[in-house]
Length: 136
Image (cartoon, rainbow, N blue to C red):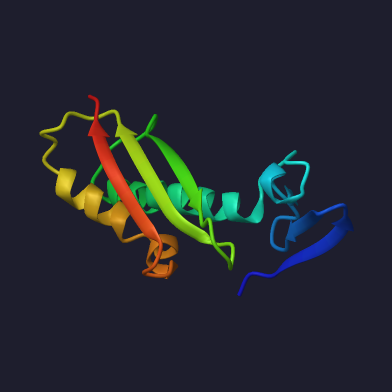
């Protein structure tokens, strides 16, 4: 089990310390929710976790098959609810992969990305779409 210790610093800012590495992460409330917006918000981190998880899981599959995915990019848009309770209602990802669209392992890589544990942990109420662009 990984332990993360978070501290409320005041002014809607928190600092989290990753136990195993000691790496520090700061979050701020977003501008549209009374914050300064000077860093990632907690919901921004959810979107970031989905994007990075998809690339990581796809990367694991790529390593097993000797495929180089360096340069893959995910752009993810986060949509918040307009009603209460405030929550993420949409995450739209566009993944650009620097490989040809007829790559023989295309289905394997796309399925790996779609099966990432973070994406699978989201509520079914969150519209979490992913569009793949093969740009090689």
